[in-house]
Every structure is written in structure tokens, then in C-alpha cells.
Amino acid sequence: MDQETFNKSQGLWIPFHHKQLNLLINPMKSLKLTEYELVYLIAQILWTLQDDEDYSEQTRLVAEEVSEQIASELHNYYLYQIGLTNYAHRLVNLTKLIESSKVVLNAKKDVFILARIFDLFECDLTKSELFDWKE
Image (tube, rainbow, N blue to C red; front, side):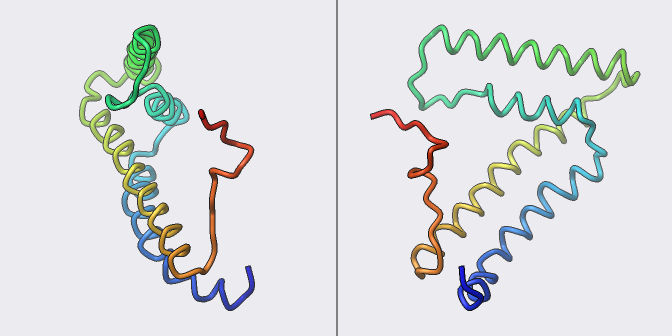
């Protein structure tokens, strides 16, 4: 990307950075998120199935079992490792981070859409080797 295109695209990123800072970075800092909690969040995101997708019954059962296991592990972590008996409010804040990450992701998608519309740059991950799309 040349300098002129880079300068033109800077304004597109402002809403994304604002949301990322206010919805993810600052809340994570104020929570003083631990590695264990971060792993919980990632596992929760990975193993939460969308209702509109066509998953097999076995896949749904495995996802449910994994979700129960990670919730149990987080409970044990709070109770036995850090001695936190009333962690409901903290868990609510963790859950909010998952939803906030979706908002931030959508803001990033908006940047890519606007960049494509105004012919600034293109970021097409569908052509990437990272994806194995079903035909």
C-alpha cells in the first residue's frame, strides 16, 4: 500500500479503534483479566455453536460437553485457586467481552467493506490458504 492510500484509509479505522479500545481493551484492563479467564473466553467462543448452522447431533453434544467442562473448570479456578466465592458479577463482565468482541469484529468488517467500495485496499480472506471452504 502506498503512502497516499495509507493516509486516505486512516479515517476508516477510527470507529474500529474506538470500539476496540472502549469495548475490549479498557474492560479487559479494568477486569485485570487472567490467562485462565482469557482461555475460558476463547474456548467459549470456539465451542458456542450458532443455531442457524447445520451441525450433527454428535457435534452439538460434544460442544455442550466442552462448554460444561470449561464452565466447571472456571468455577474451580475461582473457588479453589483464587478463593473467589461470589464471582457472578465477574462472570457477567466476561460474558460481555464475548459480545463486545463480535461488535469489534463487525466494525473491522465495515472497514474492509468501505475500503473495497472506495477502492482503497482489498482484504479478501476467502482467497487465503487459511480457509478450506466447502463446495
